[in-house]
Image (cartoon, rainbow, N blue to C red; front, side, top):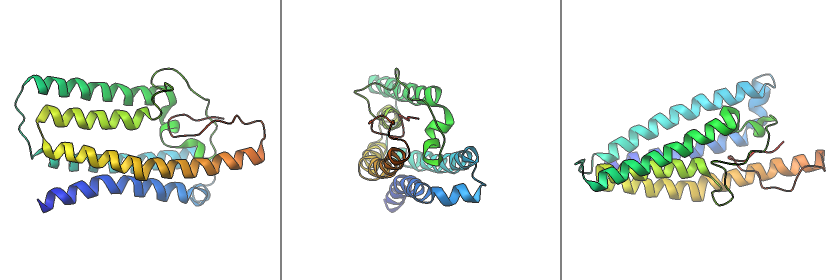
Amino acid sequence: MLAFIFFLLLGNISAPLLFALVLHNRKRLLALHGGRPRVVCCTFMCMQLAITAMRCLCFEKTQEFGDSSFTASGFLGYAIFLIGQILNFGVYYKIGIYGVYYGPAFGMKLPWVTGFPFWRWLPHPQYTGTILSAFGSSIAHGSIGGLIFTAATIISYAFLVIPIERHYFGELDKERKVLSPRVHDRNISQDRMIE
């Protein structure tokens, strides 16, 4: 049980902490990399992929607390997992790695995107895709531990990631309005970048 709690906390606290550290130190990171935002984005992407691999390992460890028999709920779980992955791949397809890994926070200009998966009623398609993937996998494996991990991920996103994102992208939006008053009054989030 102690190992379960360890993996639960490690998997859901490490990513938001990295996220906050990178965004908080974005100007230093840019200076460290010679003012090249693409290099900073790629560095952040590598760090985030390492954290994601660790989260997958933690999630896999929580899946051990379940029964992986193939039933109707297993097929439903795989369908939910597939929907989540379609959302994730849709985000990568639409905004690319520089949009996914916060290029505008490092000074990159990216166009505003609309259409699938960026619908008005789905403000964070990548977070939603990640949650649906974890939830579907937990149902498919009949894993109570996986469901608890998914609930912790939702809490992590709701109380750590999204508020951090709002804070830093709100700061970025204020800086842009001071520099250029013609910028649209839209909320900036990870999933919807503006010029």
